[in-house]
Length: 205
Image 1 (cartoon, rainbow, N blue to C red):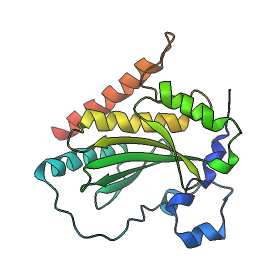
Image 2 (image 1 turned 30 degrees about the horizontal axis):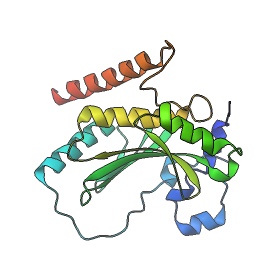
Image 3 (image 1 turned 90 degrees about the vertical axis):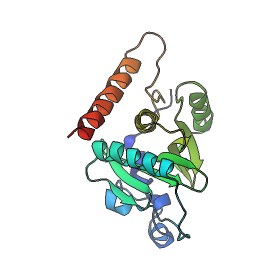
Image 4 (image 1 turned 90 degrees about the horizontal axis):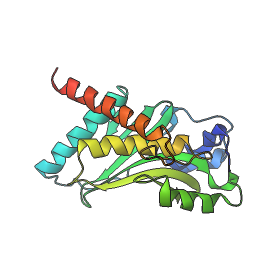
């Protein structure tokens, strides 16, 4: 089984930093702080958003704030922390899609057979979340159309993306389903239920 040190996430802020910052140090020895991350959005003309999509974005905001009261929102994208893991949510109203992502590891530091293992995990244990590669990094990612995104879908997507980041190098699992009579599936469902209960409580106060 491939195993990776959690310290490999130290350089995962690279892709979200400015080019100048990348040039200074391509492999920082300590994990980047939350302040070092930025969505670095390109300037674009305002896009008219339908009332339905506006409502979905509002529900997404509620879920994120329930997980991290210090979450930051830039336009219709968010950055927050879940159990010390940096999470990003990016939306594209024009394309009608959203994605949840989390940086995991530098590609240059992976063992030779790591990519095959990631593809295997994408086939069975990663489920709705996926391992992906971009900007010399391995990411956890969850994509979904905005117009059919429910609050439960979004909450589940966050938990699955977080899980494949945390289990990278061991079980490579989204936590949503487990085989062989293990406990992971029940634990995931309990986490999801607690989050949805908290959102319902917030909506009534």
